[in-house]
Image (tube, helix red, strand yellow):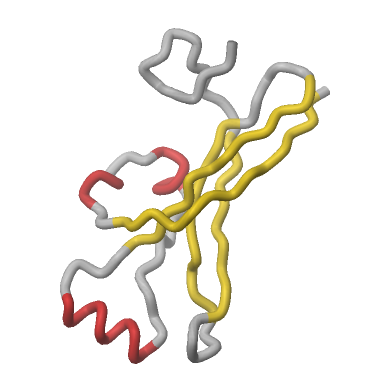
Length: 106
């Protein structure tokens, strides 16, 4: 069976889909609404995955206030940060909902 947990014995590393979702804020600036990643299933058939989305947050109140006024919110510049998760444990993030994706594997 397919499992998405690296500690599970049936975990298979492979191709991933990395999502970066953007949308307008209160001032009409295009800002990041969430990041997420999921492994693509190898087994033929229809598969549905729910991806937990998250956004990076400023570390101080001053940075939060400045980013709100300027419309420049924290973003990841490299999609590998989202896909690998390496180094993300020192980054402050906030949960931002879920995205459901369907795969049809042949």
